[in-house]
Image 1: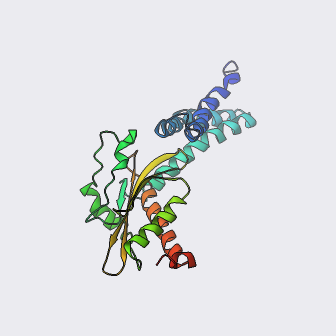
Image 2: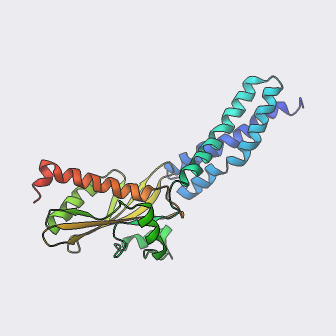
Image 3: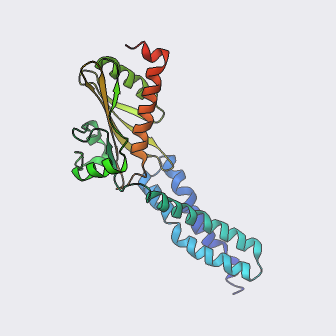
Length: 243
């Protein structure tokens, strides 16, 4: 065993490198977000080996080396375990709409490489899941004419950090864009549509993840945050002047 112990750091490095460089390379756009996530997740297997090694070194009286191995192993294991536990809190869907009877249509999103060959129509199977899981996520009504409501939505959207508007269609009262963010810089698509009511407007929003079946609640949170910002802006002096 004395010949093996000098190599104790190898499983530590094999664990640490993907855990650190997976997110880092994805954030720097050196590799695709999905590849960064897979690289990060690859740290789990060596982490188990490193955990066993850390316990062995500690038992053998090599506490400093054992502590390094145990800490290195614990970080990816805790991160993955917490992610799995968090995922269980949300439905395993990746497409959310406030208007399930007539979901806004994604058009520009079809040009993204990640969406090539995908059917971007709203999945009928998701509708009941959204109704049950997000009962409060409904269309937003504003006491503004449609054109003013559209301008307000456009003003808030164009200032939103991480958002890129790819379509600003004033005649159709529709905005479409993408949001890139998070640890691995995944990109989600969204579309915002204004519908005229009798004396006001209805704003619908749809948000869809390009990668993965589940979204950890990110799409619903994006819609809720945008609607909250719209409501706050509408109440401000600059927002009321739009009328």
